[in-house]
Image 1 (spheres, rainbow, N blue to C red):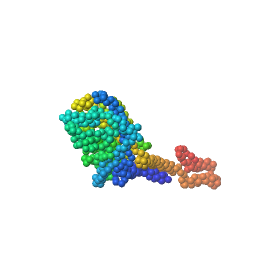
Image 2 (image 1 turned 90 degrees about the horizontal axis):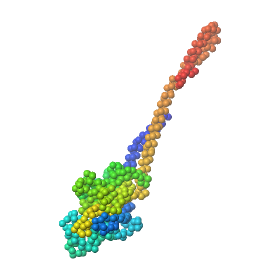
Image 3 (image 1 turned 180 degrees about the vertical axis):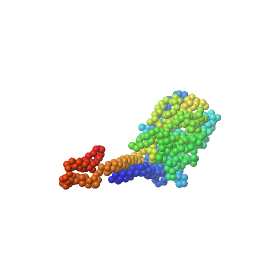
Length: 547
């Protein structure tokens, strides 16, 4: 019986070790590999091609409430207006698969649809006052890139914007961001024509022709429902750990905006997919063409989403001045570098005088707050976060936030800008985010059910097997120990025969030997009794003799 118990418990223990630690985890990992790779025709590829639900896209604008004071060098007093809520649909068009390289090439397309019903009463027709996006940007651009032409450009700006030649611009939100602000180039002025000629040459992507003599400027319309660039990424069929990795962008294998390979290299995915089996130390990296760089979120700890375990990652822009590996983002390191929490976008955006930061200068240098009023940075509202399920690579929740600021300074040659203060001037910030619904959470739930079941059965098998084997060994030891003692104390058949003979002989002696003297009888009887006692006595477990 003890052998059968030992065999059964040994099998249970072996099952817990072999299946629990090796076979079942490998089966689960194999299923994940097949389900997450971007193979044409599978569910993961279909979702990747066109995300079947919208992301949210919020725009917050900083309204200047003291424009005259601001124009004369005072601190701008800012009022945040937003969010303007948009549904953002992402799809990938013009796809080409390369079976040999295991890559897919496509154009990324973003489509924004305004949702006034989710915009807290905002309609898009609200009047916004901000630093003049054309007068300031054109003047600052020329001052930095073509200083000898600044006087000519100053006169041209005055003629083009004769009715709004100021340091600030007041217009409707939708005009500023999507419908466009008109630039009328139907003029005979040489100075104005010089500026319009540059516009015809495509000097700025966000200034597009409307007709033969009119251009429209807007912050985002040129990005809406159009290609954000052509990506080449790994499909993960041959190597699942490379899933989504960006290989090329616009046929280039790295950016060319910065003076250093580290800052230009691609590191990460296109941010719509992540590989499975990631470790916390790897971080969550994405290639961001809008900023001409790769950005990485760092692991902060465990989190939960819809009852499932996740990993929380956060991201900010850091402090490049104190990060030697990022000095290639500086103009002249280490002395001339962007302030902590900011990034100079001029090398990326064709020398446009723009600075990126976290919303409300979160985690930024104290100097940023000295020149502005009305900002209130908070982690829960302004930090970039990702809640990632690392086994499958699914981002349960992700929020990407970035603020765009004007790199402002006085331009003496342009009258409205002669007295503005030198500062990083907030314009607006955007938030792009997703929180997957129950349907897609349930796609990864079986993974956790399988892993949990495996962990429970694995340890139960090991514990039961260990205890069973220990119990069987103990029983076997006890039985063997008890059988040795019984053998030492068992009366043999010879002893029994001797006892019988010696018990009967005194009676026979009394009947047949009447001539033995009484003294002899007593001596014989005594000797016989001693012999009988010797044969009948045996040791018990307590070491005492019993008869």
